[in-house]
Image 1 (cartoon, rainbow, N blue to C red):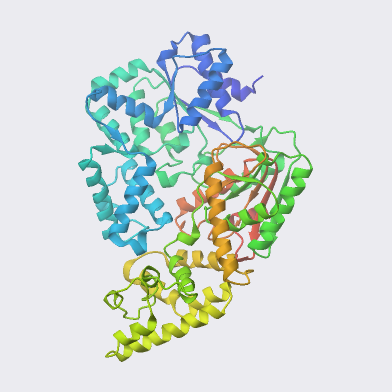
Image 2 (cartoon, rainbow, N blue to C red):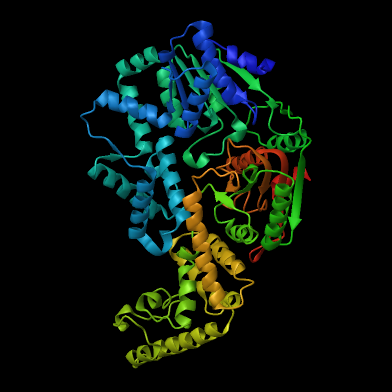
Length: 608
């Protein structure tokens, strides 16, 4: 029933244990059978067992599997997430009377967006920047760093510190805490109240932690407080699958555990029952290049022959065509659409693929929220240039383009809800330089109206000087010009085959409908839908066929990943994606990406 390695891990009893499990090695099976063995093999009271994992869904799934294994309807074993358990500790310690309101993640995001926009809306009203700031706030909390000693890569230091302080002030004023505060409060409580710590040790002498590689410093410190000195703590993880550095998770937490817990027993689950030999061998070659990891043997226990292919394509258009053709062939062969996954590094990547899938009659489900590129702060002025050139002379439209680049046009010159450039010229009668600028703008707008969408966007960027404006904006206020340029490149690439502006606006409408539809269907489990998701979201999942988009420099590894530990995390991310496949694995390397030459990812050098 179990391999020798699995049996050893299941039968482990007292003392600290570190179980290193490879992808597809049956880690969850080991955990639930170990709980069963504690109760029925060693007569441990179920209410003395605490099982912690990272998501509500994972905790509930593990509990359900345990109940099914033991043929029970309910159990006193406590299954939960770090946050739910820590919140229970706080509420129990402070009593139900103390008002503690938790800010959920969507509310937190909107509040941080509001704060960033109040600082500089033009620069910071950007989903990627907002996500980065949220992650960096979490790292400051989880790594217990002083804000003054943290350098943000998302925005200027002055703005970052202001945003951090404004956010914390907002929470204090409204008696709110977020999930990061929950950890901080719990750690402070347990550090200061030995009586509570001792009580928790007595309540839960047996602790099991799943996905331990995703633990951050603060979570680990809390675990140490409630599991020392007896240390009947059993952690299961894979340092090769530590991919949440942006949340404060560190792969070296497993090595820290093996150092800091006395007489720890390290157990290995080396057999991968999911992936065929070709995929295990290739993914193993990749991950062995990481230095910060446990050395481990990786072997396949799958009977599938499997296939692995790196496909070089001319551009994104050709990449999408090849993917769609392969998916169609697989479905004809009998592969269920839900067993086919397309994985990507960022949510900006699958935009054009969605069109191609829908055009080909292939239904799909998106696990993550796809950003609306047409609502991006960098894109809005480009669309508004086109809109104004085509006759939409609303004041709100003109305000977004009139000084991009700088033309010295003042808001005070525009008093009505519609803007007529001839009247602007009259208002600037005594300023020759301003009249010259308005005259040039009028000519530029006429030119835009004569071009196709692709040429119009290129004209706005290059001839009018929008690119130059963005470069100067970044020089003066901070930001990432390369990222802005990439977004505009993607916009331009999306318009390459459009004949006129009617097609352009139809494309925007269709794109937004696809996004809205994907949001509605993201929680629906439908066997008839191909799965689209980020590499991060694919962790823990399994598919018959996996396609990984754009394995090129700047995408994976991501352009923002520069330090050795960041590069290692990017390599782990690709490893996670590769090991999702139980049969076929395709990696794609476009030679042209947007307006740039695609350079094959350094990660593929060892695989070719």
